[in-house]
Amino acid sequence: MISDSTALDSAFLALADPVRRSIIARLSRGPATVNELAEPFEISKQAVSKHIQVLEQAQLVTRTRDAQRRPVHLNPARLEALTAWIDQYRLVREGQFRSLDAVLQSSAGQRGAKAEEQ
Image 1 (tube, helix red, strand yellow):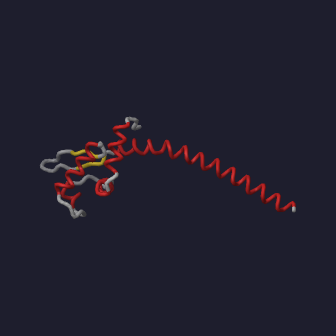
Image 2 (cartoon, one colour; image 1 turned 90 degrees about the vertical axis):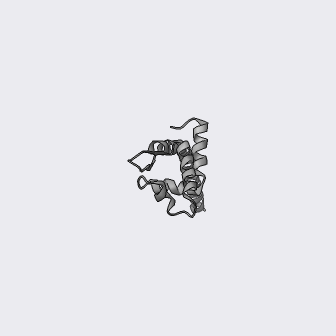
Image 3 (cartoon, one colour; image 1 turned 120 degrees about the horizontal axis):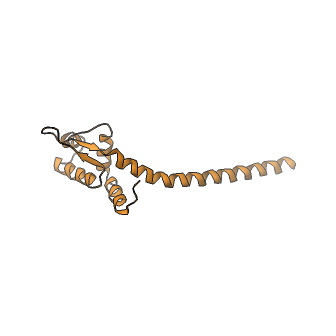
């Protein structure tokens, strides 16, 4: 799980940009080159390369060399670590909501019983 504050900051900062989120979404379907990643955007390939560099610095993507191609790959372990960090807080909130639901149901049941008595 990601615990280093700087690592979390860089990952969330990288994901704050819609172009970078779109790149992540595209890479979830498989590796792609910069040219392939640049296709849907009306920005230069150089700008897409800079977005990829930000994602690399946040360790959300990696690049490999395949002859003359340099495909970009999603780093699933990093995304899983972010998800685990988020889940720890989500689970706490879900428990609180379940407790609130129980209190509300109990309260509604008591009001229903009082109404029947009258």
